[in-house]
Structures are given as structure tokens and as C-alpha cells.
Length: 130
Figure: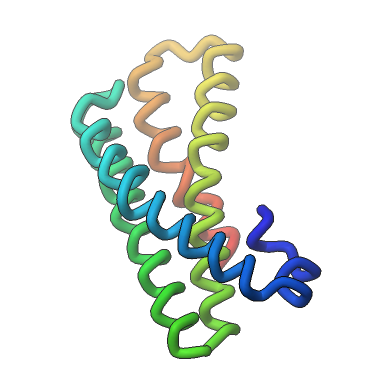
């Protein structure tokens, strides 16, 4: 969220740039590769795992596109790609909320509900963003 702060960006461009590179390194070097490994062991089997794998690749694609635009000093598309990245990163929270709600209403097939939540947790917010 710090990187989305317009005031910080205007006043401290260097800090924004350094924090952005930290985010890129952490995402591409740690978070996204580990999520690909974890996708193989997802509750819900391969359908949920496939959702998490596609989510990881999509997030990586957004990060790379955002970096390319920033390096080329095309800041408007950079901002949109990084906002997409943020929306995709928030999918973890959406998944927890959706899964928790499914548990509260007493779904009859928790595994099927989790698979649906795994896909909806990032496709629905991304579609809303677009």
C-alpha cells in the first residue's frame, strides 16, 4: 500500500523506486516460486492447484509488465500493471473470506467450494478491476 501512496511518490521518488525493486525481488524471487510449489499440494486437488499456478504466473506477468513500463518511463501503464498486481495479491485475503463464509453457511462439499473459491478469489476481483 505504501507504493500506491501518491503523496509518497511525489515527495520521495527515490524511496518509491527502491521499495518497488524490493517488492519485485521478493515477489519474483520468493513469493511466486513458492506459491507454484505450494499449488501442487492445494486442498481441492489439481483444480485448485491449477488456479494457484495460473494466479502466480499472472501475477508475475503483471510485475514484469509493470517494471518494463517503469524502466521505459511510461508511468501510466506502469501504474495500471502494478494495480493489477495488487489486486491479484489481495486474492489471498479474498480466498480466506470466501472459504470462511462457505464454512459458516455449511456447504455440503467443502472441497468443491474451495475449488470454486480458489478461482473466484482472483478472477472476480480482476474482472471488477478491468
